[in-house]
Each structure stands twice: as C-alpha cells, then as structure tokens.
Image 1 (cartoon, one colour):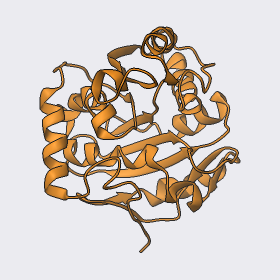
Image 2 (cartoon, one colour):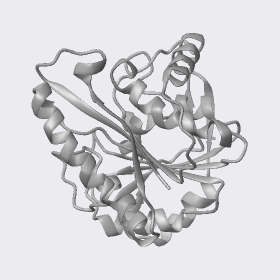
Image 3 (cartoon, one colour):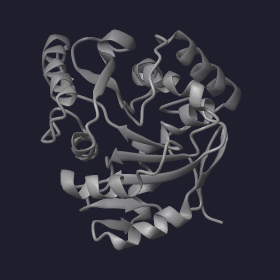
Image 4 (tube, helix red, strand yellow):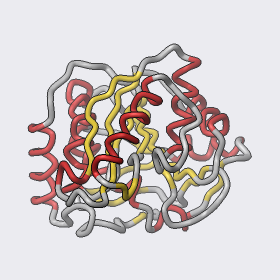
Length: 259
C-alpha cells in the first residue's frame, strides 16, 4: 500500500488533528448557510487563515449530503512541476492529520484510456492545491473515495473529457481548486476578480492564469457545465486583505457552486 504523506500540514493548515478539527469546524459554522445541491464546487487553496473562510462557504453546502456523496473528483493546478496534461499519483491513500483518504484506484486505472492523463507522482508529492481540500472533505463527508488530478498545461477540452468520464451519479462530487488574482493591490485585485467572477458565472472557458491559477481545470469544468445546461452561483469572493493579510499585495479567493 502506497501512501502520499501530507506536504503542507503545519504550514497551510494545523498539523495537530484536534486543532485542525476545531479550525475547520469553526469556519464551517461561521459560513453563511445556503440551501443548494451542487454537483461541483470551485474553492480556493491558500493557507487556511487566508482562504479557509471562503472555502468553507462552499463546503458547508455538503452537510445534507454527507452520507450520499461517496466519491470526490478533485482537480487543481500544478505549482511545483511543469508538465502537459493531467497527472495521477502512484498511491493508494492520501494522508492528512485527520486520517487516511482512500483513492479510487479502479477509476484512476480507467483514465489510462486518455492520452492527456499520466501517472506522475512528482506532480503530487509537494502540491498543496489538492491537499488543503482534504481536511474539509474529511470533516464534511462520512465515507468517500478520491480521484486526485493535478492539472498542468491542458486545454479546456482535454480537462472536460476527463471530467465527463468521471461524472458519475449523484454520489460523485467534482471539486476544482483555484485561487483568483495574485499579488495586486487590494483595489486592483477587487477590480480584476469581479471581472473574473462575471466570466465564471457566464461559463466562460478561456480564463487565463492571470485571472485564476487554476484556469485550466476551471475552463474544463465550465465547458462541461455549458454542455449540461448548468448554472454557477457565486458564494463568496474576498482576498487576503479581507482575511489575514495586508492590502498592498493580495491574493484573490472565490467560492462557487455549480448545479
């Protein structure tokens, strides 16, 4: 059994399981409560003190479905390794301070039919965009398996093909991990992110890295949403200047539900 150990516990989020559980619980309790039934979520992936409250606005939607959602397809951008296509890990479990997450190995093996998908453990070993989502999922869902995909240089169509293949039934949830603009002034970030939010709400599939670091997985998800006649609802949009940082150079965060 191969286990991918946490790479950013103690940095992006607490490595003490009791503290981590309390931090996640408090963020979920403080999030605005909405009654939505999402098939997919777009959530940010910075340190919890920065983007955790924004992510919690999406994850709190899962509470009514904690028994129903049995598989999570998680896609996020690569921050450490440059490569073409989408990368799977060579692992059976992902570990966090809250315990082990079982990977859906049969689904991962079935992705071998796609030329844009490869097994690339290096893309996963230090990547935080997927890892920071796991404690939220472990807190919001009872039993689930995971299909983790780090996305490199990939077209919207290439990503959409994979999402469509993994779509499943109501027991499958799709999560796209992405922040918005990076390192602008507070006012400039607000201006840019408001435009990006409108583009996402309109199911635009040509977002760039300057708009969202996870532009490739977002574009693929929105292409699927277009074809399936789905809608995007914006849940929360803030930046690090609103949460735990100064306002000179901020990172933007948005949470969205797709149904």
